[in-house]
Length: 245
Image (tube, rainbow, N blue to C red; front, side, top):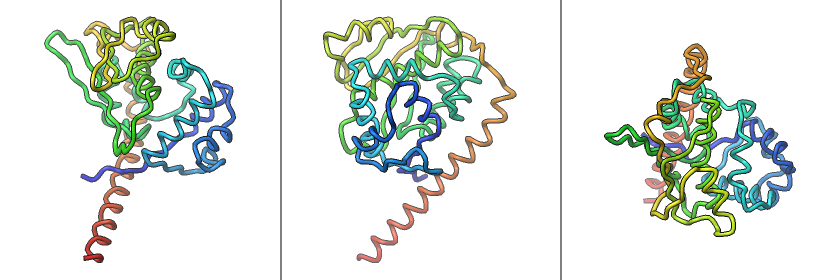
């Protein structure tokens, strides 16, 4: 099935901008995007535009710890159905499974989950249709998000068993990242984060099967709409190619 190449920002970004103390218009101008991007009812961005949006936000915040700053601001107030569905899960493992299915409703990415014989869970994000280098801060933030998600769900301090990045954080600030993740960050070809079986299955206090049943139909509907738009775009492109033959 064709995948959508357009991704959508939700109203929760307005809350993040406010909490970060930045003006949306400044971010949009840095990114070369419409000033009123967040005010439009349906906002679609390509992966390249999303990267520009993210880089514009990083530049506007102007902090070497930007990835951690933004993740620490994520809360239940950041209203987004996939995030709420994750918090309704019984554990981080179930939350990751749900996010793997619906992640592209939040960002231009997919999520691979691996569980080893000991039950340790490794999460490997990858970006869809990326034609340019993924901003390092975005790679870090995607991994850090799962620490934040686990702590929101369990109300306990949760640390990673291991973290791998293709580019390591700058040395003067590496200790801040090590402290946040709870382990040394290793160098490797792709970003990934591993949680122990204990932390992967630690019960979420926010678990709610009733709320999940409310959110799931809407998530399925939104994902289906993305797939339909992708199919229409693919069909249109194929027709254009045939016309050009």
